[in-house]
Image (cartoon, rainbow, N blue to C red; front, side, top):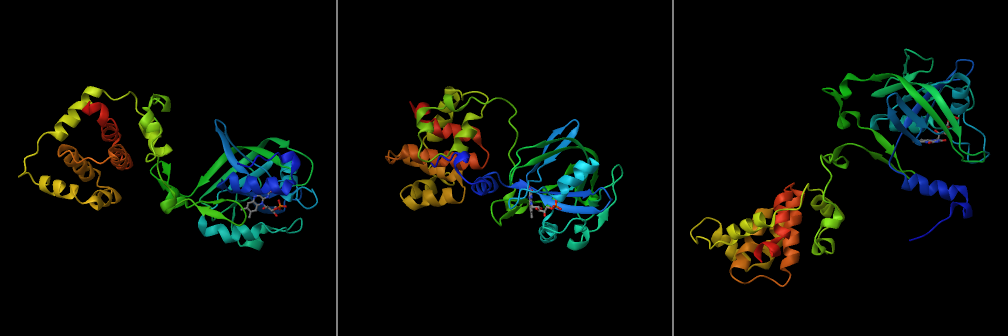
Length: 335
Ligand SMILES: Cc1cc2nc3c(=O)[nH]c(=O)nc-3n(C[C@H](O)[C@H](O)[C@H](O)COP(=O)(O)O)c2cc1C
């Protein structure tokens, strides 16, 4: 691990770490007007939302890295106390990048970058009509975070009006695929928040038992990952060993050789690759049946514990945490 004290490096190096490490960052496409009412439009990715009651967003137009001067967006908000934030979809990203050019004061980037102006209801600055969501904001506070080049200026605004495209909605919720937002990362990198990049993770409905309650052989497993262990640690209570014992007793009961699947499982028990193949295709039930067949015939491998962990992992990945627990507690269940 490298330990880096920002006081000992150039601000451009800190900037690099922040851009790449605090990522992906949403992009605020900020519309303002200057004291003479001339529109300005620029993107800012040091941006986020900070509260819902009232709804608050903040972003940071930094002092220019070259000469420490402040950007037009900053001066305009100081002058008027108003700005719009339009969110950025993939379909807009090249134009957004174009708008970030260092145009002279008074130049209208809506025109330069080819965007349509969406009139606001409560403030003067325009939103971007192509954006799926535009927020009208009134400045609540601003905080100058330094005074040298690249130091930030936090502009905190209350959202006083939302404009959201009908097509972005699915019922009362906004749909990620329909929004198709992009985010900024380090250097020239962006990412797109749709398709396979998006996954869902249910909110915990109760406090879990925690990592400290997990048996040592789980915590030191060379098979299970931190994400796997978190699923074990997220259960409401430690599994009842009696129920685990019942499960294993049932699983290891002498099998009717005529039953469909029994001969296959026993046959496969002698084919070492078959177990791996079942796991690779996520067939946890068949992999477990193979392990059970091996245990029944006394042919269990030295690495039985690892194999049980691998089957448990397949169950976890299919969402069956209860069965995963039964797998990893086999030793207790068989004792
Ligand atoms: C995607 C993207 C994100 C950006 N984020 C920031 C930012 O968070 N802060 C900043 O000062 N400049 C940022 N910039 C650069 C500004 O957009 C650029 O300096 C712009 O010219 C400022 O315009 P203005 O002087 O009209 O306000 C970003 C540029 C792009 C393309």
